[in-house]
Length: 226
Ligand code: C5P
Image 1: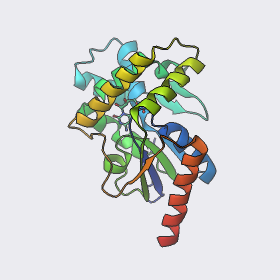
Image 2 (image 1 turned 60 degrees about the horizontal axis):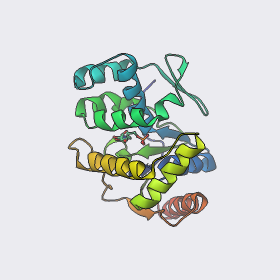
Image 3 (image 1 turned 30 degrees about the vertical axis):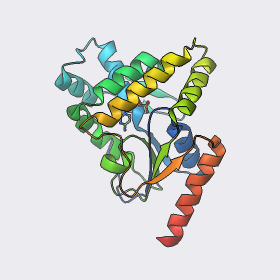
Image 4 (image 1 turned 180 degrees about the horizontal axis):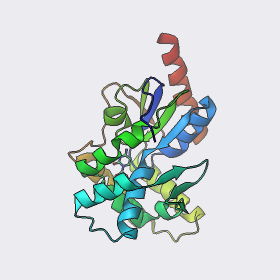
């Protein structure tokens, strides 16, 4: 993958787990006809690699080295790792949990940095994650920090899991979200926090369509004042 064209405009959408970033970012990208980066998928792919290759998750340089070597292909709806379709495999809760643990390692974050920037290609990029506006694309044209109260996020996550046919213990989902929030917020390397120039958007009481519309309004307003 070649280094991205940092001249292409970026909309960064950051926020905590299950705030709806992925769904909103995908819809905004589709609406604008732009590329999309699901940066969480890269951390999940690294976690999947650790499990698949029996790498010691505490050996962070081994984790980072394996992440650098990942042969990834993003297609319209699918993600391939070394030609294996891992789209569903990386969405499992235990993979997400390991992703959240290893994501606190600066050496892994550094290993994934250029790969993320390479997604920045014309006509533009919508990037979702935790540090898109602070670290990966600090010059993003628009930064949105999407929040939702933890109860609303837990309800959404539980619904997602049920739709995938998984049994759901709502109190476990809530506890897991709180744990991930704490880990993402308290880590030293690229902690989850809004960039100083980010627009905070609370989606607790908004539908997906309303949230997408709010981001598009911000983008158009920003264009008028650019
Ligand atoms: O967004 P998603 O839940 O798929 O991300 C999986 C994990 O990867 C998160 O829990 C978070 O700890 C980590 N992550 C990160 N920085 C990003 C995206 C995800 O640390 N930009």
